[in-house]
Image (cartoon, rainbow, N blue to C red; front, side, top):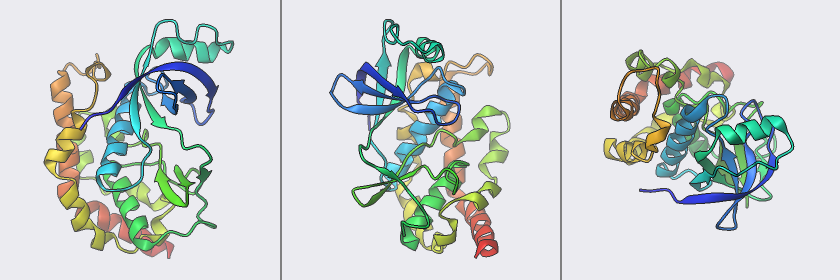
Amino acid sequence: MELRTENVTRYIMPLREGGSLPALAEAEDGFKYVVKFRGAGHGTKALIAELIGGEIARVLELRVPELVFLQLDEAFGQAEGDEEIQDLLKASRGLNLGLHFLSGALAFDPTVNVIDAELASKIVWLDALLTNIDRTVRNTNLLMWHKELWLIDHGSSLYFHYSWTNWQKHALSPFVEIKNHVLLPRASQLAEVDAGLKARLTPEKIREIVALIPEDWLNWDDLGITNQEIRETYVRFLTERVAHSEIFIKEAQHAREILV
């Protein structure tokens, strides 16, 4: 398992969503990407969440745009007129993360786009596993592209890594925020999809995904632990959550009963 690496050649426009200022850019391969910058608010931790979340979704056979590592060199962005963007680009030199741009995709609208209960249940299961707080009616982070549902933006997942020392407790949390999930009303098959998803997301597969994290995304000065210890914690956190999926399934089922 590996991701391609491309050089960014052209900054096209900012995508002013939230505080992280992602951008649309073109890479050396001629394709356009939505770039998530290491110099933005939550730094490389948001990129790690995006990477892990997206690749776990892919392992579960959910549709996610291709993720690529995007290199920004020293000179990139010097001609940018907006000072805020110029500062962001300067702070983001090195390896960033890009999602293949789905040209012509439309935002998922739960009142218009109907999806089946099995797919809804798989996505709710994924987001409960990842503790993803950002798939709500207000901000679905779902796209319709060529009549298929695509998942984007997993950067708000795995928020345990902002406190870190208490990861064991977070690993067994029921994740009460699942009550706000846009697809929860449709997710009537959580128990039915559980075994199949767990069979795909083995400890070995989790380890492969975590191994994709670039070394310099793990240089956190505030923890006093090695990069390998950080990786191992991600592996153990995710493995524990998968092994005890009944905890977050029960919470989601309870929240759904209240809704419907």
